[in-house]
Length: 293
Image 1 (cartoon, rainbow, N blue to C red):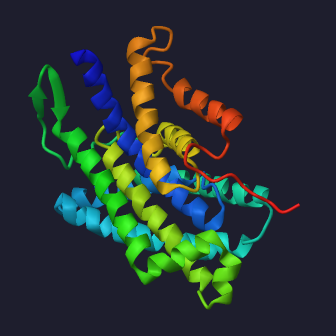
Image 2 (image 1 turned 90 degrees about the vertical axis):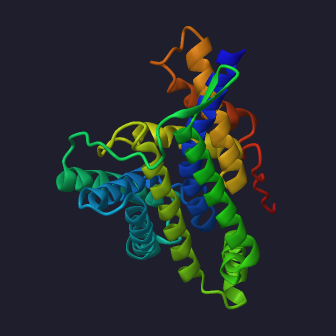
């Protein structure tokens, strides 16, 4: 039993990282209707910026604050320069733009920092709490705490601020929001900025666990897509819960399903995506699209 609980705890820690990137995907989709395939690469680029700051001698938490500010501004700039000119274009055009952004950001990171693996400092202390044969690492607790804090801050923003109310209005009905005087273009830029900020948090959390190099977020993005698909692309809370479920499912499958093991765990999120699309395309907490005849 202790072994099962241990796997469950490790799955929750991994799932929290997937949840943070899935939350970034959902934020952009809510405000623009775009599935941003470059979200993982933007998170990776932000993580390199944080590494550069720490490498220059800045304390980790100061480097993180500066990175989040730069990521927020960068996300708004991307929306203004790349996304706004193709607003209203066919979905295929938007997909191609985000895929092009994926390639551009990946190549830029490799050109600036090279493709060599780099060590990234872990913001949380080493060691673990042990109880009943179960080890709960400080790093796992820190990751869960950070994701919970991000989710809580976003809830407060959307629920209790005028900016959050405007963002909710634009996400629900951009046309009606524009008619009542809301500057939808500014709100959409804020949405991209917030998504880039949340994605940066995901990259900073995953880098100490994996490694820091331009391709580090490729696998994480697959899990994040599975989390967003499972929870619902129009449900931030669903994305977080979906990430935790995907993390636990992947960990348990790797530990207890012999045919999967550690080498085929990547098949778990793919199976989740396929199953959700076949059974409940809107996800567990998403709303089904309703169109007038």
